[in-house]
Amino acid sequence: MPREECIPLLIDQKTDIDAGRPALREWIRTYRPDVIITAGSYMLGWLRSEGYDVPGDIALAYVSLSRATPHGDPALQSMGGIDQAFKQQGAVALDMLLSQMVTNQKGLPTERKRIFIEGEWTPGWSLPRKGAAAGPLQAWRTLICSDAAEAPLSAAKWKPQA
Image (cartoon, rainbow, N blue to C red; front, side):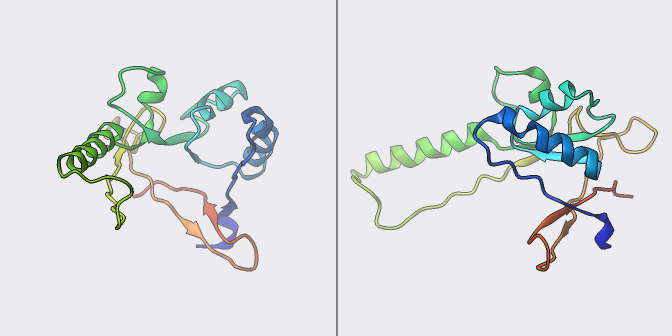
C-alpha cells in the first residue's frame, strides 16, 4: 500500500468522552477518513453534532453491536458493524457455571478455559451500499499499514471492494 494512503489511527484514551472531541475534529479535518470503526456508542452523536452525515460524509462501523438486545438506541442497533453475540456469550458462561456446580468444582480452575464466540459482520444503514443500485450492503476491507519508523500501526483509507 502506498504510504500516502495510510492515515494514523486515532486512539483516544481519555476518560472524559467529550475531552476527545477536539482531537477527533482535527483528525477528520486532516485525514478525511472514508470510514470510522469504533467501539464507542458516542461516535454517532459526535459526528452528527459536528455536522457530518452518516453514511453520506463518513461511513461508521460499530464493533460492539448487539442485535439481540431489545432496548437501547434503535439507530445504534441497526448500524453496520460486528454483532458480538452477547446473548450467546451469556449462555456459554451460564453453561460453564452450571457444569462446575454439577461436578462440585469449587474455587479457581487449575487450567484456564477460553471459549471464543465469533462475532458476525452485520450490514446496516451506517455503511454505504455497493454501486449505484440498491443492492446488498458492501463489505469493506481493512487495510493496515505498518511502518516501524513512524507509528507502529496505522489504518489506510478504505476503498470499496470491486
